[in-house]
Image (cartoon, rainbow, N blue to C red; front, side, top):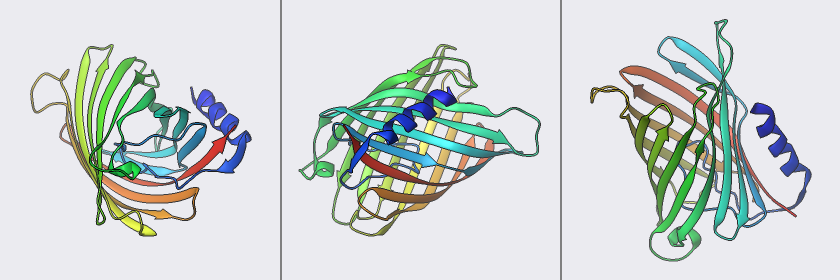
Length: 248
């Protein structure tokens, strides 16, 4: 699976002909925005290296990749995954959070320069990485842009073949797009309903960070995330960039 993701990225990069308009980085969040890439536009979100601690186990996350491609006006294909490498452990690396989805615009709003709520729908399949199980994913995404801040609300549903249903919601807050470096944050709640007791399978996380716009095509990000997952503490540092370009 890792080689397939890499091949897709290389193929896209080989056909670069022109820069796109400003990239809207949706690294470093777990959620996303109610916007899609323009037709024939690629947005490559890369976390070349990160750090994650789950309980007493530590990992390097290298790489974390999201490949977005505008397949048609109002439609974007998304392929993503993350590779975890245990630190101070003989355990093998794990490919996680692998999915292939299609995001579609249902309503253009303030995020596209219009008025009101921007609305998108994301549907896709969860692919078997190290978890070795399939699933389906459906998420509704709402965005609002004001002069002082930008807000994105994600409402997601995942159903796995192991008969686990997970509901999640996240809220992303960003500073004004006009700032060269803008503060960002995200709150996320998720519940795995295959875990029995109500207190089991519950994840709560908070992320704080910053996004810096370098040019029309390059955006850089850094963030720290703290979570409580099923009663266990998690900490993560995310550093990466988004590269946006058009292909023909």
